[in-house]
Figure 1 (cartoon, rainbow, N blue to C red):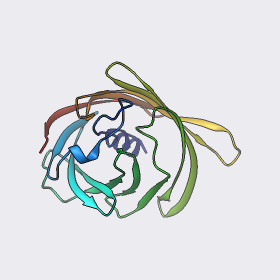
Figure 2 (cartoon, rainbow, N blue to C red; figure 1 turned 135 degrees about the vertical axis):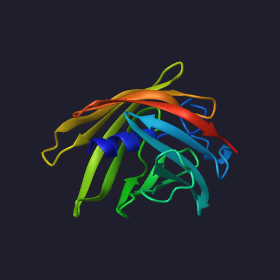
Figure 3 (cartoon, helix red, strand yellow; figure 1 turned 45 degrees about the vertical axis):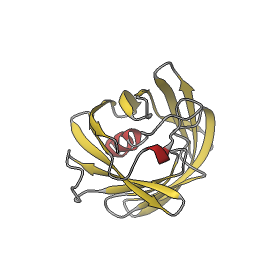
Length: 186
């Protein structure tokens, strides 16, 4: 589970909007990529272009943007909110209306997917607070009993495009630090 949280966190990268934490996906051209270190793992985010109304980017383990093994795919709206994630194993996770990772203030969404062959549906509440260099966040999930559970919290520093420069995320398992190693924006 640590891997899913870390990958999802780093995948929250994008370009700044009027609120200062959103994504302006049209400014990041097809073939652009950014290489990140999350803990002791390296991942490359490759901007793959558009599919219908959505901007698509792939995340691949390692630092080779052309690698195909282990590739997962994210679909985002024009503001950079993820609406769907297709894991490397082909599992689909949907976020309705979106994952709220780039919304200022409190934002509710539903995450739905399959883990280990079992379907799940979780109501989430994410709170993002802008800072001078990015934002702080906290995300809660609601169990079947209606109680909220803190899933993760952290902080993110953004560059001029809104791509993550560095950040941290803490969940029940660990604290993970992130940093961008390089980026090629086309």
